[in-house]
Length: 384
Image 1 (cartoon, rainbow, N blue to C red):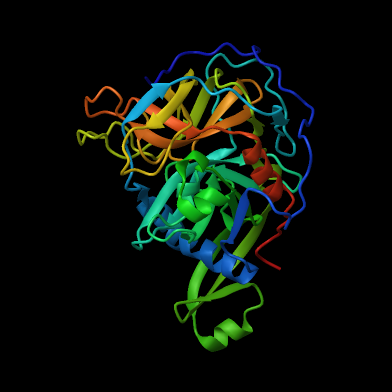
Image 2 (cartoon, rainbow, N blue to C red; image 1 turned 180 degrees about the vertical axis):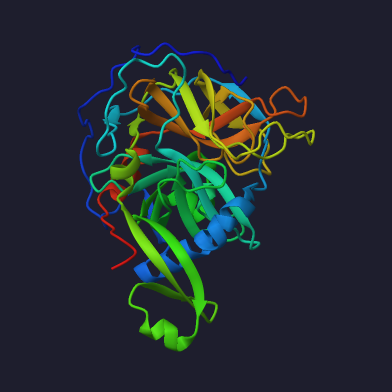
């Protein structure tokens, strides 16, 4: 059940320490898999140009992603018991952050959350939800793995993948952050195992493009600023480097191997219809949902992708909120908390043709290992 109740601030004190057991070097054998999104800055500039053209028209055209497996039957079973040491990565503020003069009484939306946009396997412009997450290079985005990987071809990523933090009514207030590479659990990469439906993507510095125009070959050759070629056509633009993602909007923390009993806030962009065809959400602004993580949910439909250890909360969110962070220990004053889940499934648990449950893969020590691989990768600007 979605709730919109006032929230007394000051109830949570955020940890300021980094409690990550162990580190992993890129390339070591582990539970992760990595795939390239836009591996060269020239490619990244073309991707940013695609979404920025005509005053961000493609962002407004996009529709909520709707993977094939939306509402598998779920059985509620015994609660998950962590088998390893709890790990926590502390959240971090954006540069220049100043705390509010007074503690807010209502829920304050985090700057870290936004939409990921991509072109899916059928050539359609789609969106999911996501959040910036704290890392050494301040360039990591957390979302559902199914919002990065092509559902029709195992191990293949979506096209033109970008993150737009703070998305609001068709606008990109903090710039567009093009994905450079993505890290997920090897079992999702190889088998689309939804018990590992999470991904951590490295993004380039944000960019804001203006004065985008198609030009001749001679004009393109003479241009000394931002330029790219796409589908055989040449484009130039004025580009502004927006800097690193975490420096611009901050980053949420991460917690894993935690007993799933927290009260969490989920922030995202639901926009798809309910099963009865009604459309309770528009997807043009961020919404929030509130509830207590519950038990373990096991898929009872063998035709769906596997889900044997999901946790969930009651919520009326619909598609488009895929990948939205479930934040434990969320501080209304700080606008920060700890990502303890990412929306994976939307479920009609009481069979009334309306979604009433959202679930997430349980975050364990292997989730932490995948994150640490992403956290080591440095990127940079898409313009020189």
